[in-house]
Image (cartoon, rainbow, N blue to C red; front, top):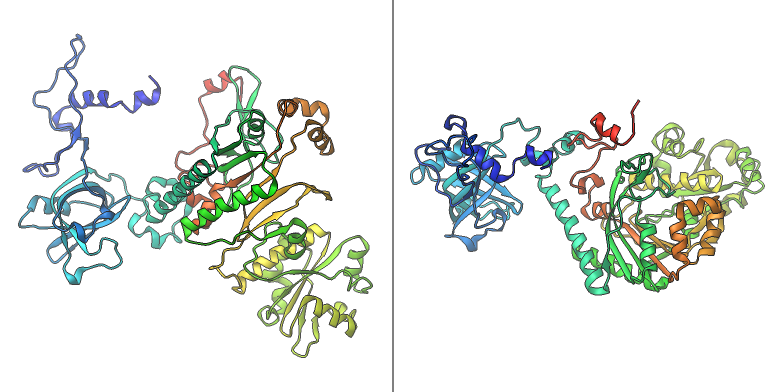
Amino acid sequence: MSLLRRTFFPLPLLSHTLYSLKPSLLPKPLNPKKPASFPSASFSASPTPTTPQTLTPIPNPPSPPLLWVPRTALCGELSADDVGKRVTLCGWVALHRVHGGLTFLNLRDHSGTVQVTTLPDAFPDAHNAVNDLRLEYVVAVEGRVRSRPADSVNQKMKTGEIEIAAENVQVLNAVRAKLPFLVTTAEDAKDLMKEEIRLRYRCLDLRRPQMQSNIMLRHKVVKLMRRYLEDVHDFVEIETPILSRSTPEGARDYLVPSRVQPGTFYALPQSPQLFKQMLMVSGFDKYYQIARCFRDEDLRADRQPEFTQLDMELAFTPLEDMLKLNEDLIRKVFLEIKGVDLPNPFPRLTYAEAMSRYGSDRPDIRFDLELKDVSDIFSDSKFRVFADTLGSGGIIKVLCVPSGAKRYSNTALKKGDICNQAIKSGAKGLPFLKVLDDGGIEGIPALTSSLDQTKIEQFLSRCSARPGDLILFAVGHQTSVNKTLDRLRVFVAHELDLIDDSRHSILWVTDFPMFEWNDLEQSIAYDMVYNGVEIGGGSLRIYKREVQQKVLEIVGISPEEAEAKFGYLLEALDMGAPPHGGIAYGLDRLVMLLAGASSIRDVIAFPKTTTAQCALTRSPSEVDPQQLQDLSLQTR
């Protein structure tokens, strides 16, 4: 029997143990004079063993302290249609108050809350029991549903028209520890409550209605995806290995040492990429998986060391069919989860268009700020910064901010928040011009003096600038320029409240460069972008060995290294691999957006912190030295 099973007794063992305890050590009933009469499933005493070492049974053992009360209704599902019914409810005490000689409590379960009131004269034991309750006690309440008085109806509660008149109350479990926060008021205090506290006491945090809603929404999304893929398109769900070999995928692997093969290691998968391609070679037509993935990388609000993907791969599926199937899937998710009709078909931008117009391969197009390349206008500029940039092969791009001239002072543009945003992106400064009411320009003297009237008119026309607008510059290599202006574009949009939160911007970005250093070589790759966040991405795969080997050579992987790391895939490609392609969705990120949460930690039941730790279980942790010895490992 495992250590955990020996520590947390199986029910028959625990039953026998309780049977042998002295009565004085057992919890007393809530009301010794009249114990509540609930039908219950509880432990039964084991037959007395016949071995010599058996403990002597105690005559007339007390009632066992663990009870399973069968409930007949759920708190949040009762309504005026149930008035007069006798019900048994189980849940947590969400609110407790005394008013006009009566005691009231709100009882909460996963379905919602309902008010429970007492009748001191008719049911004094229940009244006394309710008086002794505290917040978050786990209780069973038996009583009758009745209508609330007209002046007591609570329109804010789903069950606000009715209440339960308690006849019997049983404490199933009391709260022995001091609560770090109150679940009932935590919603209002969430912004003041430190996330470390919420994660440390995650079981309590998950009782909050918002967290319950988030986790249930996640369940609904996954269920919807499964049903759509399986029932509409005949996908097959196939699990791929968690223990595999390390492969270069862009992030560090989590490694697992092998005890059986000393000195060797498994790697936890960063994605099921290679296995799903081999499933296509195996003849499976449509594969999908709700896959757990692992990456040892620096974390932020939308990243976790372990995360979940909706992963899929299809054989004999051309690009347009691939995109349509996925559009239909996401359109169905948004319609049934959010009641939102997404466009049909989704808009598309090529990678080159997205970078040129927005400086990002995942642009948020809920607002219209677009970048403009003005390198040609300043090709003969005497402004040294611009001349040196163009002379070294760089570019000059601008972002025109409507009515930004008055919104941002010169001081703010030189050393305020907006300037800091540019510097954080890697820029050395933030050149700018302001368009005056008379159509003239104001800014760095050396820059304004380098432009004659013809150039000014050409420049303002290119920027679609009007009086009162602010024009921000970024100069340098194309990559750094786009990075700076993308960051400024999003910052300004939030600052000036330009984003329409009621809009749902979704699009495909296609035709990605195959290599970062060569924009001319394109892959048949596609990313799905929602409100400026990449929610999914994939490609049509290379399915011929000679082509795959050539690509590996280009990225610096020798034939010997390719054989050592990818030999099994190359071998599979040589055995009749069909044309195939696929996509993977970041499920945590998608659910975060659907829930309107600010962090994926709010849509994962037991997430890690930003330092890749579990505050609840305090992992990672040290282990028994013997375990390390068994693995032929040692720590410093």
